[in-house]
Image 1 (cartoon, rainbow, N blue to C red):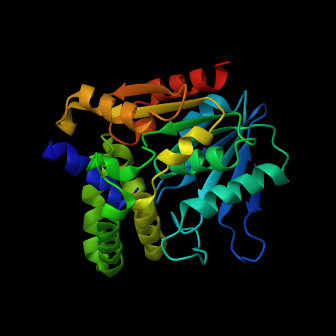
Image 2 (image 1 turned 180 degrees about the horizontal axis):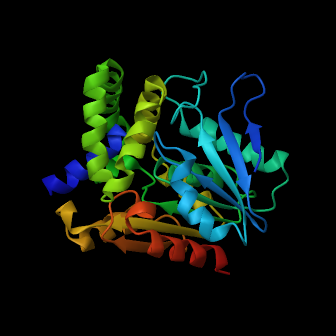
Image 3 (image 1 turned 90 degrees about the vertical axis):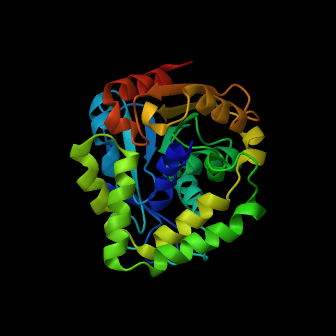
Length: 294
């Protein structure tokens, strides 16, 4: 159990034209979007401290049949940060993507989000139920802190979230780099991609990373799940190295998404958090199934 918790706790250390979409008062956009391919629209949202490049392999599988909108979040992976309310991240990003959908007149696009990006996708679908056509969440819960305590509430985890945010901000450059190297080793089994993931994190704005981490630790989307009207697929990882039986991970996901009627939960085995790297073939096949389902 402790090994599994340590593995998941690493998430806290992390987690063709360009179009800009943001609050019009901000000189730097909350999101930038690269598009490729032709066909029905699919929006791809990366996770905490990640680059949109995490989608490159699956994009190559999809762009002959879909028009892909690959999101980059401000403040991550070398992108300039934006001014925002302290501790707030998911809500304004979800709103920026909703604005992008409306501005570009996208007709019920599919939305796929990894990790923090999955929470953004859920919030967008709950608060703007008329916009998406379907949603896929990749290895994320509607309340992140359930990974550590099934009885967690926003109130109970807020003190720890504040403490962790301050720890991230106060860490020296060397200590932070060491943390990220250790964390990434627990988040992806595929050694060849670890360096690029570590670099994306090290090139992220520290305040943005700290605020985003605080937000996902304290944001409980379960009460909003009933507002979602579109099909939702959840792809989640399990590996024997988690130190927890697969059945217990299944139970965690089933209970966490219990309020979401009709949700399809699919476990991908022998993978850490970055499923697209650890199991690229199965991941691509599951994404295709998701996009083709009626």
